[in-house]
Image (tube, rainbow, N blue to C red):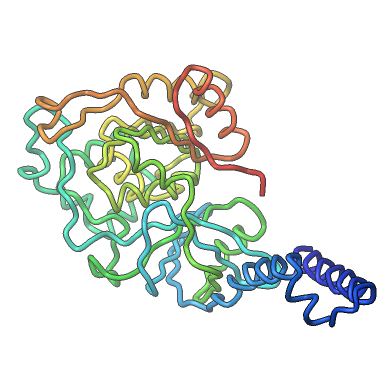
Length: 346
């Protein structure tokens, strides 16, 4: 429809210009050059064509995390937190935008202390039975959120989304694709080795989270994926996290859950698959939770929990579907809390 509309505008511009030349006697070419409509159409057409000039078939490494989610890793460029890339296997039919997760740097920053006089990140050695790659895969489905949280906070940080093929500090990024329709379902069922990228990574609403200190991040389901870019690239940026998802460990993997807890030791991770969660069936009251966490804030400073200052949140960023985003943003703004979410008018 977009291309058809542009062609109709071009046809209209040509007909109007031809009619004007008959009345004024000005040559057709000269009339076009002095027509504002012509130059506006040129600019619009170039802007529409530009992303197609950046269409590339890329190599991709796919790792199925669960029947609901797959991780795609690319190595052709670096990205920044808050960006999104458009992917497709049929460029002429449809494209889909996904938040990017930068590969971890070669020397990850030391995480902020989470308890008075905390030395667990430097003195406690990792538990071999949990950090062994095979054991991690075999036990993921049997670990509770409490167990993963304890392990994340009492062991040295492990590079998030690391793999045997990935070198720390290497060029590239990952994308989490969750089951949200026919296209994503087919992608998870048949992971690709090559896929098209169109255009360049563009910044989204998650970029504003870096402007506020501390910032409360509210995500539901696969909405955690765009947030991970901030947690990976700016691990010391003070944030509070609320994440509501069905069976997050099984669906998204232990690495994702551990990264959430390492970023915010007080993170509120809600498994909506557990019967009785929330105030209406299995849905938590995110407005109430976000307001409570915003008021509670987070310790900001280099002195850790014992010497740092607990500061109320400066803003809330919501990454969810249209219905939840509008509900949470509206509910928080009514309470005087600065809240930001994606715009769903495209």
